[in-house]
Image (cartoon, rainbow, N blue to C red; front, top):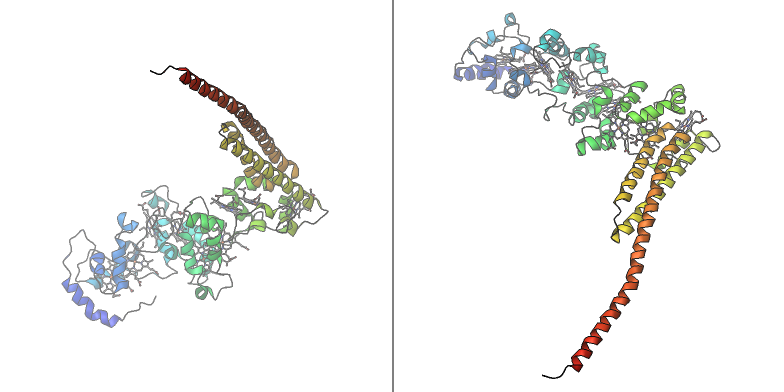
Length: 423
Ligand code: HEC
Ligand code: HEC
Ligand code: HEC
Ligand code: HEC
Ligand code: HEC
Ligand code: HEC
Ligand code: HEC
Ligand code: HEC
Ligand code: HEC
């Protein structure tokens, strides 16, 4: 580690500063008292930031990571830093995982503070691509402090933490999107750019939907490797359970395994998952099915039948909705119809998931259920509209009658007035 300031300056400045510092009480750490006011950012910031660090709040001090003696007087910083007091200076990248893990992998020790906290970070880290490369001497990979920072570490569920869910992608991108930094490696640097634009990135980072995944949902927090085919679809399936379950029952399950292609990424991608549309199945230009199937084979026929089913459900629903709206505008109560429309709408949503059966019979069951509900709504809609017509016809008959009666009354009144003798 190179510290970018001139030590000779310190030889003059430091004794002066140290002389001016107030004497410290026993309870205070001389590391903190002295470092807080040192005139070099690299030396003072660790102490200043440490105030908010959860390790400080949990009662740990500088010496718990750096060694040294925080109790020696302010006039003896040589002694505070002495190797005989266990001072290790600034740990380098190779030493950091072991240093953090000296507590974090110690089950008995950690239990005293937070029994829920996992203690497998080092184990996981060593299994990761980062950890393996570090062991080979590559210091550019992420270590504990690249992701967590140091001296200002906050609980992971604090929104200001560098690994709070909505901040993780930017933390990883700090290296992975830096073309210069990553130049010597043979991997792309567009993961974050793609993720940010994906449905997942937009949900999480723009809309704050914490249910959407970020980097560590697919890569793990400490075990980051390119996920294998099985682990990716299991990751997708941990949130999209029905899609995975249907896929596993589908003819694609064995076929994709044989082709050694991913269950989900084959159609949806991974960093760039988009909101798919009906156009992605069926036999139109944008159909993913036609990447592998062609006219004449069973997959093609299935794609065609499923798309027709979906479209007829959608058209029927539109008709039903329009009828209800007409009746409602005319003042007829359509709450029952609206209720049935809801469950027919649900079928359309279910059909989007049922695509993953890749089976016309199972798909059509969902579509049929929707069609039956939609048909019910249409009948109710027709009744409501008929009702409306009846009222109109009724109105058309009653208005002339009322007018006639009014006219008759008017004439009668005039007649009475005329025959009245003048007073
Ligand atoms: C009286 C002031 C003073 C006290 C007390 C003090 N330091 Fe320092 N510390 C310094 C100065 C000045 C430097 C920079 C010069 C140097 O590296 O020796 C420094 C440097 C360091 C460095 C960087 C070392 C390097 O190799 O670059 C670390 C880490 C550090 N101190 C930790 C501690 C810890 C932990 C304690 C308490 C056990 C402590 N300091 C107590 C003044 C102090
Ligand atoms: C949880 C462990 C931990 C604690 C507690 C801790 N440090 Fe550090 N410190 C580190 C690590 C790890 C590094 C190396 C960071 C890196 O390589 O980016 C470091 C780096 C430093 C450096 C060198 C900074 C630089 O930019 O060159 C100084 C100075 C320092 N620490 C002082 C302190 C002081 C003073 C305290 C107490 C206020 C303290 N540290 C508390 C782990 C710790
Ligand atoms: C590549 C980035 C990265 C590295 C390297 C890393 N962490 Fe983490 N760490 C994370 C993320 C992301 C989380 C948040 C997990 C979550 O939200 O569930 C986390 C969570 C944690 C937690 C909270 C408990 C847990 O396991 O979820 C601890 C403690 C922790 N890390 C310690 C470490 C230690 C010690 C090291 C080094 C051996 C380390 N981390 C290395 C990214 C990293
Ligand atoms: C001296 C022991 C010790 C060392 C060394 C240490 N930690 Fe911790 N750390 C703890 C303890 C204890 C907790 C739990 C504190 C609590 O729950 O109040 C903790 C909590 C954490 C958490 C928060 C987990 C959560 O619940 O959100 C992170 C992140 C973390 N440490 C990272 C690190 C990193 C990174 C290093 C190395 C630079 C490190 N720790 C070194 C003892 C240590
Ligand atoms: C300090 C910089 C740094 C940070 C921060 C970082 N990485 Fe890395 N990561 C690297 C480097 C360097 C490699 C090695 C690239 C290689 O070997 O091709 C790597 C490799 C990887 C790989 C394996 C790529 C491959 O196929 O070779 C994955 C996956 C990965 N990182 C994910 C993550 C995730 C997820 C995060 C955030 C939680 C993260 N990284 C944070 C620097 C970083
Ligand atoms: C929805 C799951 C998912 C999310 C979220 C995700 N990844 Fe990936 N990532 C993958 C899959 C799957 C691969 C493997 C691609 C392959 O082997 O072809 C991969 C590959 C990688 C690689 C290896 C190089 C490459 O591009 O193929 C890196 C590095 C990486 N991801 C980093 C990240 C980072 C950084 C984030 C967050 C910004 C992230 N990933 C978010 C699933 C995901
Ligand atoms: C941590 C949970 C999680 C993981 C892991 C996950 N997703 Fe998602 N996914 C979501 C959430 C939340 C949404 C947004 C849901 C919504 O509002 O429709 C979403 C949206 C989607 C959408 C668009 C949905 C729509 O209504 O059009 C697709 C497609 C998708 N994910 C596929 C995948 C694939 C493929 C993977 C694995 C590579 C994956 N997801 C991993 C939670 C997850
Ligand atoms: C052969 C291509 C293909 C495969 C493989 C595939 N999907 Fe889909 N998926 C689609 C199509 C096409 C749609 C759009 C259906 C629509 O909009 O009507 C879709 C829609 C979705 C949706 C949005 C609808 C919903 O269910 O909420 C999600 C989420 C989704 N897929 C997840 C997955 C997951 C997870 C896997 C892996 C288990 C997977 N998909 C495998 C083609 C595929
Ligand atoms: C990545 C290539 C690929 C894509 C994309 C794909 N399939 Fe398939 N599909 C296969 C393979 C391989 C088989 C098994 C061999 C066969 O029967 O053609 C298969 C089989 C099927 C079967 C069973 C056929 C039978 O013989 O009973 C159906 C149904 C099917 N696919 C429907 C679809 C639909 C619908 C889509 C689009 C949403 C789709 N497939 C997209 C590769 C694919």
